[in-house]
Image 1 (tube, rainbow, N blue to C red):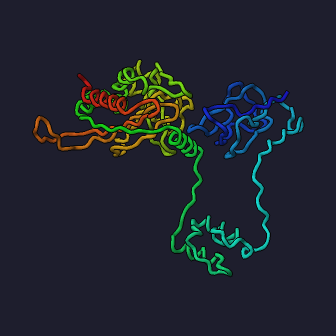
Image 2: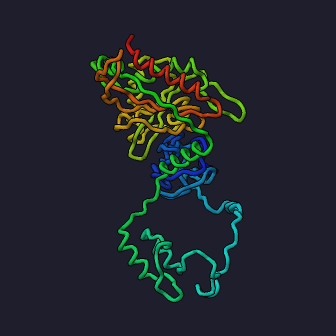
Image 3: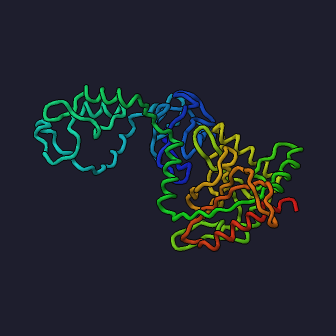
Length: 379
């Protein structure tokens, strides 16, 4: 009997997925748990396995199509079995939309008080495709109407534009950042540390292999998170959830956008172990083989913007957590030590936190501990 497999929930907040490519075709025989399709969602490309063995009778969407969760993904049955007329698909839920006003008359009939530029729909579409703002175009047609020639002339002045559709990954990043910025009252506290001890320890450890700076930072941060539990937490309604595990997110710059890969159980790992895991996650994120679960569940996040030349910043808190630390590039500075101006180096630190649960004094105490930990590495 044919089995209709619906798109499962494969990510937090998932509402739809894009079919990257099918790994099977109609008529193919598949085994249980054999990968059948690649889907893009929630910043990752994931493979969906066959829920049962059998023959592929129907593919629910073409490559590149966007399909909503719980919609038909694939039909698997027995060899020679047919599918497609067993039962009609349920009608789509009716979505209420405001009724559009009827298109009657000409532009000259429009209310004279409107501030919308006068242009026919065809002209508006042309302006949109050329990136021309009709508000800045003077119409030369009857009654001041904007014509195609007016739009073309404006485009020649403003230059060419390119309209690029955002990828599913970029859209997911945009939604998550917007939600965080709109719902979390951010406060950012700044500090600076002398990175001499940290960088010396990194050079020493790098003699045995590449040593990501994030490995040393996370190793130094875990004891601080233990002392300041509100920074390793999440707000659930009117309850602050203090997490007793330390799954630290590491921001990874990829061609598709910034992703936060999660180092699980950072409190149980030595620096060398952290280095291996961070490198593995970074490679997986950049070549799109990272698993969806490796991009979720961070309890605190570290963003090394110094790797791309950044200094101070205002990092956005990942939704579901209370804080993020941004570490900038170490730069040479004139320092005053015991009343004497001497050359030195300074590492910029930017700590953003949720002001609903963390006040300014706690933020300053946390970043002071971070400075002390960085300057005391190796002691």
